[in-house]
Image 1 (cartoon, rainbow, N blue to C red):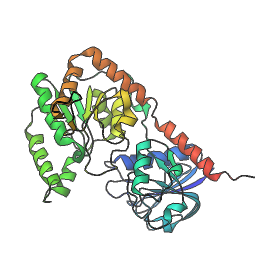
Image 2 (image 1 turned 90 degrees about the vertical axis):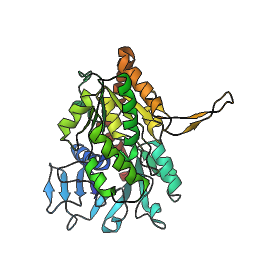
Image 3 (image 1 turned 180 degrees about the vertical axis):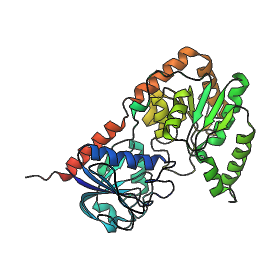
Image 4 (image 1 turned 60 degrees about the vertical axis):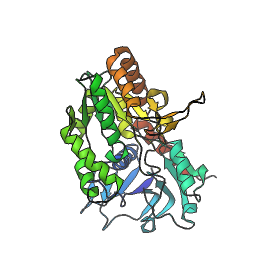
Length: 367
């Protein structure tokens, strides 16, 4: 048994210990804590949104920022090293969720024994952005899904599409795609499950392109027939939406480097048997490969190999793929099965198993 402290004090954007909408990093931290505890490790989670300590199982302990254990065999800092000086341990690990690491200064990277990453792309961007990180210390642990939530071959709502990602990464293009799909598949519907309202409130008075895009998305969300903005959902309701959908299209194009390093929502959609239509940004081609229809990012210029003038990828390119999937049952069925087979290889059990191997390696002392 290894005593592990999971420092999550930097996770302040969404609730972690409290009920509410969890982002991918919050989900990752909670799954990691519960999974390691279930495998026999003693886990102490330090959370920013607790007032009192809580016992969540025999070996899973949750603590507030005001008081918590400070000594462990392994200290895992999630997202940031800003609070690392509060702890002492035999090994320091950083569970990065991006390319930037807040609090990484001077020679601090030399003290980090391992950098678990979601994908090889994650590791490469992490080291490129932070040259003091040694590539050999990056360990691929990945992200996963719980297949128990997703029965195979669910009954789908005809022509249903679903998305549930940060709207800043591709919602405007998704709405463009849906408009074009509707021209050929009038019964198509698009369900959006994300806290768009909270994002809009944070950005609406900024004087930049992001704010303008959000204002336009807000207008279209309220006026486009067939679009349903669901907001945040209970987990069971979210899974139902994913299981109902035939297609998950997400032309992701994040504003910042290192923010599309896996795709938990996309893997959940795969587990639900959705056909996937994704952009080729960052880790998507690596993680989803031939299990998804992967297209260049909207706006990218493609040169003509024959030497003639090329053209830019636009929403119609994505819509053409979605239309064919919705119209051709055989093509959709094969895409759905490919996605599900991929998800079966990316489970939380497998992720926790790789973390357990990492802890064993960190604690192993040669004779």
